[in-house]
Image 1 (tube, rainbow, N blue to C red):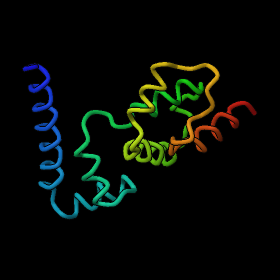
Image 2 (spheres, rainbow, N blue to C red):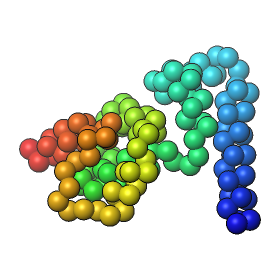
Image 3 (cartoon, rainbow, N blue to C red):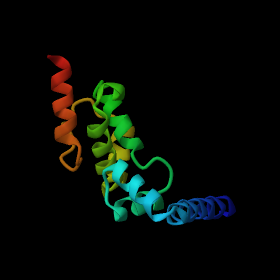
Image 4 (cartoon, rainbow, N blue to C red):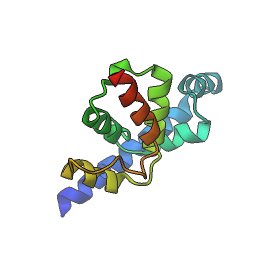
Amino acid sequence: MFHAIAEAWSRYRKRRAAVAELRSLGTSELERVVHDAGLSFGDVLELARQSGDSAALLYRRLEQAGIDMKTIEPAVLRDMQRCCSFCDSKAQCTHELDDAPKTASWPAYCPNRMTIEALGSAKCH
């Protein structure tokens, strides 16, 4: 029990530190970061509040589909990472990836479904 509380506290402190780091940047530097990321300031703050790699499930999905992340255009990959990071179906996605059903169709809840399907079909041609 104590270990779980300590881990939660550690994640909370890391998220707070990430947000504080963003807020400590000067206005022009923060605007550059937001512009380079192609996101809004609110999106950047929300991503900073999330723990760990919030797009880790995307990487698992791409691997499952046989798509090499290095072959995806950087702007497309960033958008996919953003969509995955803000997805509300992470628990369902994790469960599905862990079970790895061979006959399941692509999950309709996935915000990257159409992009991954297009990348997969482009790989086949």
